[in-house]
Image (tube, rainbow, N blue to C red; front, side):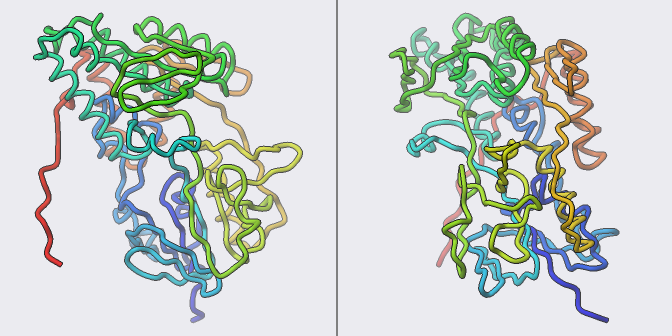
Length: 425
């Protein structure tokens, strides 16, 4: 029996997972490499940060699928990608070297601080479950400390939260904080007046959700206003020293908790053994042809947020959205399975959506716009069916139902890891 060709998938996000689902493992030996041992659902990171969901509700272990049924020839490797050696056809992680015949790069994005890398140590971000838990702990800790703080000025400083970026992630984080201020604070923290909590969202464009319709932008603005969130449009953050946010108009906001959702860039990857001068494009993304093949590199593909193909119709490439990643993952699997590259990738835009809070969401699907309760139900349904595993779906549905009727969450508890023991060399 002929030996199977070996496909290595780097990254287990939306793109990588859909390659894994669709690839024919009767033809190929499939290996997936990720820094985590689970697939997670980034659109709901903000709900972990706001104590709405547990991390296990939106995470699915790779090994629960690998080696079983359709995935019987799939092998999982835990590791941080250090290098791709094209000349030797190997991937080098911090633990091992993995040979490949085909390589699918689906590593996604990381935070973009627009040349001010010092922000990485000053702001809170939402690009992983770990970062979501860190923000959740800080929000709860500040509420607990403010409840016993006697100095009103210090208490108000503890409770000033600033969100940078008015895209879907920023709007959802600000909305979750707004619900804490309007509905939860008075009941669970009676020592604190809601007027002492300040939530601000800063967006550089003239409207929120700039990539969506104007109706969605207006609905999102109205929803945040009802949740007592202060919205600043048309201004950007000029600097942040860890305690003071300075805007481009000179406004200074005193806050030591800033949530950064303003931009993303492709995960940087080191490729050796070939000429890389023409591989990387705008935002660090890997340049591909219309079939997601990395230009100049044989049998190496870049899918999802990390890849970019430009032409007259899409001069800046496709947007870095989950739907693009999902569709490209399925597409590249079909091409590899049949060794047929005659049909270029074509993106089918299925719409955009964002939620502000309970009964408040916006959805643009084709020419249709949904807002309010209908938009919220649409948002919940789409996110629920997109989760992996029946256990996750049932757990999330139960949490959402309970929270809707009671405003209660058992997740507003501080969970801090103890000190690790020192290991001997």
